[in-house]
Image 1 (tube, rainbow, N blue to C red):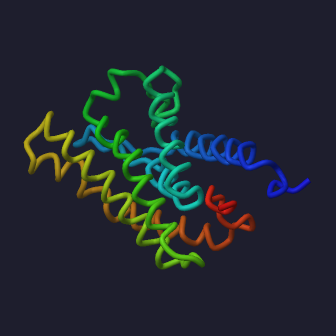
Image 2 (image 1 turned 90 degrees about the horizontal axis):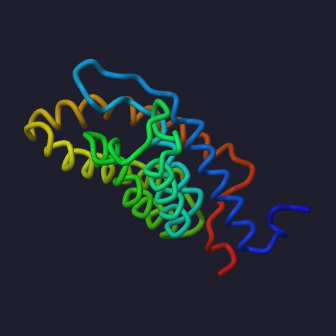
Image 3 (image 1 turned 135 degrees about the horizontal axis):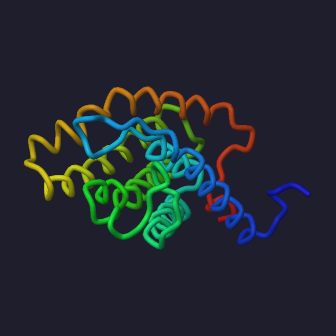
Length: 185
């Protein structure tokens, strides 16, 4: 039986589980910067990648579940971190930004069909900008705005652009196409 033959609710649940697992598997890949409370992580890009695959509704749910599971104590954030204290700490804005960034990325990815790699790149880039914006805004509660930009945004731009290119190329190679929930509409 092909996955496309499953009832839509079952198929969507499988897509969510797959994406949650994918983001969780990406969580250990981090580089701690000695001058910043914010590590370089792969999970931000994984969240945005899943948003292109899932579309806005499921992507937002995926990110919200990811954040909620972390708050509840499941060790699924970078370095296996979890808990309310992490969520309200210096990196909490980025975690909250995952939800809004996923929504924005999913909306852009759904905008027109068929999907194009250029639009997917732009969608993922804008999703990361949203994550940066929430992360930066929250980080300013802990350090001055100029320091928040230097510690929480600037060092991540080059690496995130490289990771985005990788994820866009991965999209091109996916045999499954898009998971979007709107495929039944």
